[in-house]
Length: 230
Image 1 (cartoon, helix red, strand yellow):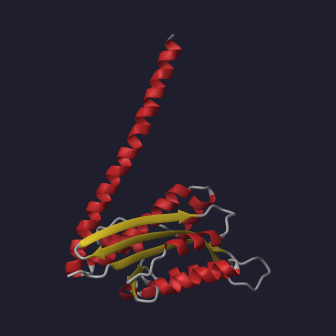
Image 2 (cartoon, rainbow, N blue to C red):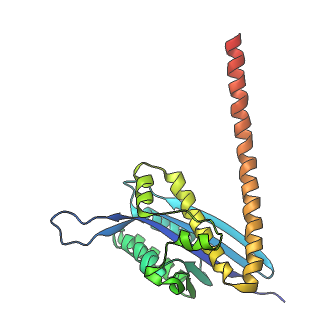
Image 3 (cartoon, rainbow, N blue to C red):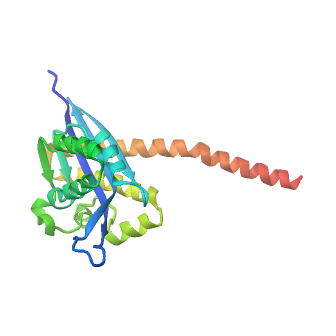
């Protein structure tokens, strides 16, 4: 007997605060700078995983990030997030409000599709908008999650540490997925084991890919030293 695949999507975003302009009645806003996606698909007894994250540089339009997300957000059976109503969706809709009309329309359709089915906000049972920071809650469950404070985000983004922020967005999306599994009982145990195995395989692939470059750099350095001796 075959079963239709079930797709779980863990979504997170990063935004920096924009203070209100002097002598302006406008309220302070946010500027969307990053997003992270972790997608888990269960097909019969098999799991497939993918993880992606993106960051825009200072001066780059938020709509570029919306386009990136629109191209990747699948029709989820379950969308998982942290403070979805109070933080995640408002940041995305605020960015869409400042985007070109065509891009905003395209993105909001994709977002609505992703929100169409089951939505799990892990912060609701922990106080909703008043919940502790995600990294604190994840830490209590022995799950690694980056400390993405407002000051850390703004500090890293303003000096161009985009690779670090991209990695943090990806790690936070993964932490949300793992935290979700901790409360999913039997299915959670199976999926967590599969996720950990996938993480190990992915880490091994990254190490293998980076090793030839490191060895090549070492050989070039040795060659330079030998040439200098001549």
